[in-house]
Length: 347
Image (cartoon, rainbow, N blue to C red; front, side, top):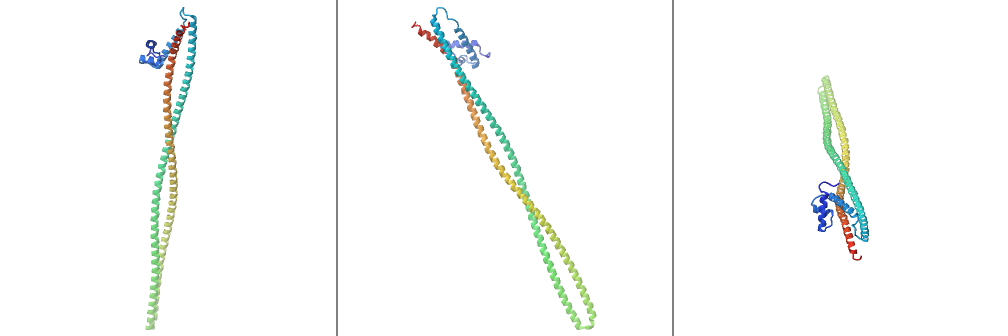
């Protein structure tokens, strides 16, 4: 339905102006004369004007016109109408096919662009998740490495303590051996001294044998006491050596536990490094996929722009065809008007 901006009378006046100038009326020329108005409104008014003109042409000719001329003119007019209708149907079908093809191509391009955007969004989300997972694994790897360094320091400290305990044990055993040797030598020396003194006393005075026996008993008791004291000290040294051995065993057990934990930590670090490598590889693959998706999206966008440009050209061509179709009846009418005039002299 025509809009109220441009009236039929305006279009009719513009057509009269064009005919007065000797120009063939068309939608474009009518709009140039009016200076405003949409092509749709002008086309509807122009179509109505052509319809009225065709209806007026079907009015019987005035009396006095020869029948032969009327028949020839009617025949020419029907042929012109048939040719115009056939050409118009062909152009319309061709234009409709081109419009449908362009619309379908544009819809496919928009769908492909939407699919590419969805794939890009999915890849971006997966890429963000992969980066977050990679950061988490890096933090775990850093913590594991810190724990490994801590346990290594503990193990080194335990090694040092164990070495110190071994050194102390060796020193204690050496001191014990030296003490045993010293006391043995001292006892032997005292034994020799007592024997010498006993021999001297026997030589000096056999009468003092009882005194010497008492002295010998005293010496024996002293020796027994010294031996008991030595045994007691030896037992103390042995107990201390046992305690040091037990403590050394505990340190060795703790060291083995630390070594096992270090081994487990090394295995965990190796596994994390392997996962880190796999994530880096997966990240590279995702980046390549994302880059391909970007390229595909750019290609689809370029195709969409080309399709829109082609559709715009098609609409321009359709407007040109409409203008030609609008000019066709006038051209045919001019041809039909010229034909009877050329045949009059032959009559």
